[in-house]
Image (cartoon, rainbow, N blue to C red):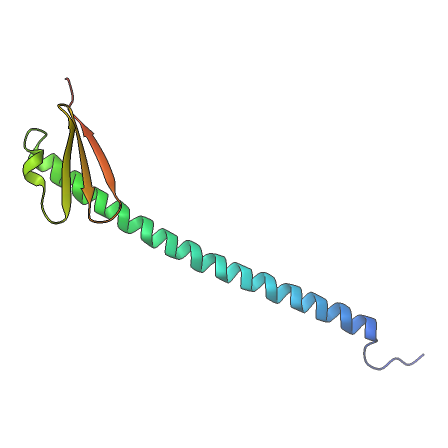
Length: 99
């Protein structure tokens, strides 16, 4: 029997496999973009928190209220606890050490 070309079933199976592969590839690309953006935002927040921590270490616990400016908000919560907040959503709590 001389068979030339593909049968309808073979063509449908090949088309289904191709569509599945394309949809999987699209999903992977969309996921990579989403997680790339999330990582960038998290990295920016982490760097902002690091800058606040470095400033707080430089100033010292007793002088923390003087650290408050347009980018860093310092709120005393108790005698031994301060809340340091950046203009973004980064909140850091610092507690005076008893030692």
